[in-house]
Length: 156
Image (cartoon, rainbow, N blue to C red; front, side, top):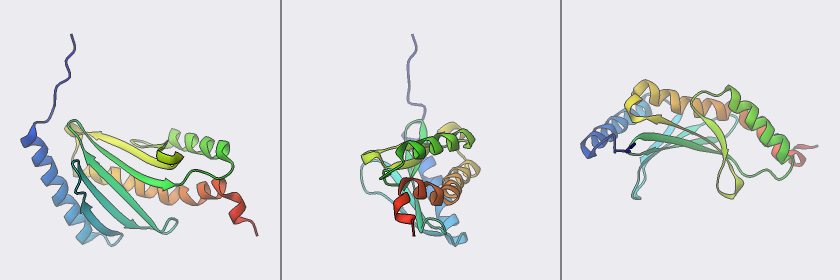
């Protein structure tokens, strides 16, 4: 019989939480794109990292610490008003090229970019890769995605 156990106890999670706090604090001090880093006050252990962008004015990455993984996500855009099939096809094609993250449909059919890292593999390099992947993917794709899903707003 296969039993699922908590891979990280409270002490290990507290160490991981402290490491993430310290890394995010250092990154905010060193990286001018990071406008804010904060913690949520709900029951989950959750951070947000708000970054300035060019294509999309702001990108906020949420990090959620679980028993086995660190989940990360960002809101990309609202549900498309038109060309939904073309937009979803574009998202699926982009998913093919992404490593460690994927586009998904969330609440109210909004588009999100999500991923997760097993806590056993979590280190500063992986945390940087995760946040950087979400940020750069949003910057590279936001303009074209918004023009597909809201095409009539961009006609002259």
